[in-house]
Image 1 (cartoon, rainbow, N blue to C red):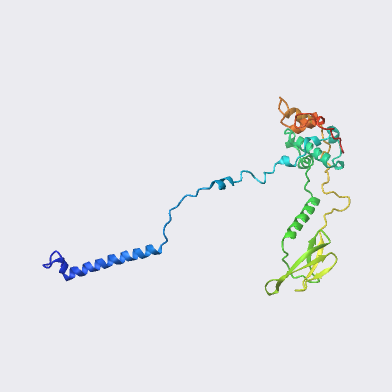
Image 2 (image 1 turned 120 degrees about the vertical axis):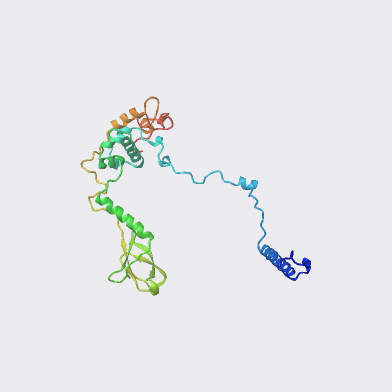
Length: 287
């Protein structure tokens, strides 16, 4: 029966007392568990936004150590251009020096690009020759393939059959000797790398696993009377000086210098401005 329907006061009723004691026990237990869990949890610290101190703000680097590489970083100054450009463009490019060859191919290549009327009409071989590029042929592919193979083998470990006297491990090299490290085979046959010098003309045996090595030289050469970049008979290898004059007339008109190289080559100026010989004596071809 409920407390309200009993004749005894609520505090003296046995069932009411038991119910009250059970409720108080459960309430106290919940409070005790909450207190113990709160004690186990670390105290929450207020989040304070980070504020940079004045000396940290001053320590920020406002410059770059490495600047971006630009095409003009690899160009020669206009002062180094020869005095007689017409004679330069009529010379044989294979007989020119470094600076003269640079200006010859730069003028010829830019003249080809700055001629949009005839540029699409050029063949692949003619365009490569005018730009100073190597034409893809069997000899060029062979040498480039050897170079790429050596660059790969130079930096990668050898994986293959165990070297014997009949079938030694071939060590490619461009010199007469090379340092080789042998680590044996795989699993139980593997051992600590053993380093030794492998020279041309000898068979070398690893002192740990008896594996045989032999050096093979990689030669960058062509047979006699052959060239890596032969000129095709259909390619016109004579530079037409009128391309430079025509291009300068097209691009450098109306008070605007849109092709400064042609303007400087024809007028003997520096970047479309003062004369080249105003600063120093102009260099002749071969000087």
